[in-house]
Length: 334
Image (cartoon, rainbow, N blue to C red; front, side, top):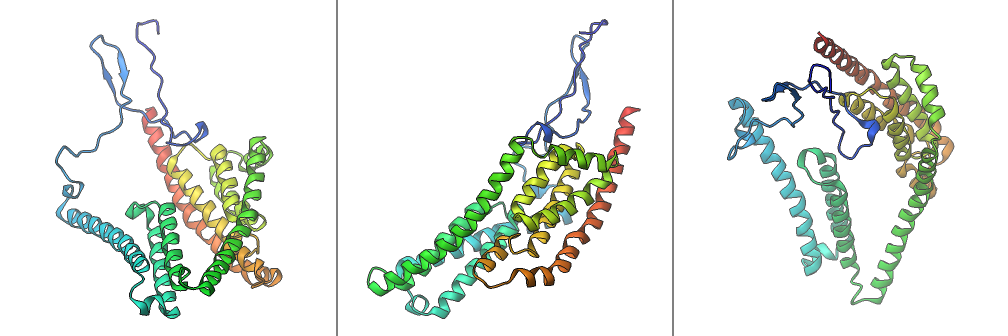
């Protein structure tokens, strides 16, 4: 309580859902209102959308915007319907074991499973647009594909088909298990290092290299993630980069999203030129499909271009974002 009888209300900093305290967003000055007793009370309520009861989001905006919103809404519905409907259709074919030309033909099975995989991959790529969880989608897709594949061997009617399906399952589980046994220890080591604050030295070194210039953070994160992803897998290197960004990135949500996107790009590019940098290259290397030396020699430069080239565009976008943010804060202080 201050001397003049007014309460000093502190600004409340909104925190991202599911994030820790170091992921807090920037404080935003909210409009103040006066209460009946003359005290200034800060309005911390969430903003409301200008949509009343009985109104549809597609009805907002100009006529052209309404047409675009309706088309986008319809496209999302069609993608969901066609993707999930195709999986259900193939599952029904597998359960009914009909028609025979699809079940018995190896060529037809390959085409159907390839089509299912392409549909599932497309839905995963547009997850944010269609609003379908990619983990659930891939689990359903894997179940449908394995069911459709198993029916073609007729394990209930043929002993040879049963043994062939058994060998196919063992082969698939062996490939997936070998990759998981490689990824889990790497991720466990990184989590253990972070638990004992092992990245403090890295954070201090990067902070000294930045020297107050925020525009240096993105190139450092890009190069660090690119090189680190070739030693550990790209998923683990992305986790390391995000943990570093949580402590060093400015309190600006959009800027952090740009840095996180750059870390993902650099991690995928860096993992492509190393046999142990990506799940795909690791599986190929385990099966002796590729050699370590040839992979590094032929893929290092293309991977470097793919990892560093997006840095320029994202850095320019981040510079404009920080300039707008600084101008907004300058106006608020007046």
